[in-house]
Image (cartoon, rainbow, N blue to C red):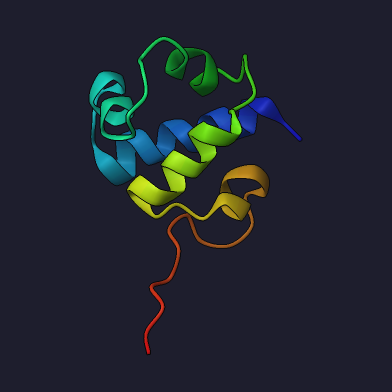
Length: 79
């Protein structure tokens, strides 16, 4: 697991997919701003709660986030 690459993908989600500031990005997830900078710099490992919130709030494919494989956003399920 490469924390630097995970951090780059988190930054990509925030800047390219959502277009939000760090503060707005985490507030919409119900989190505080204190850790997002360290996550984006690859200095810390995302918590399970962060990953869950990222997936639920922004529909992010967690396999892509952790490995770079697949698409950044999950494909909607159609019935």
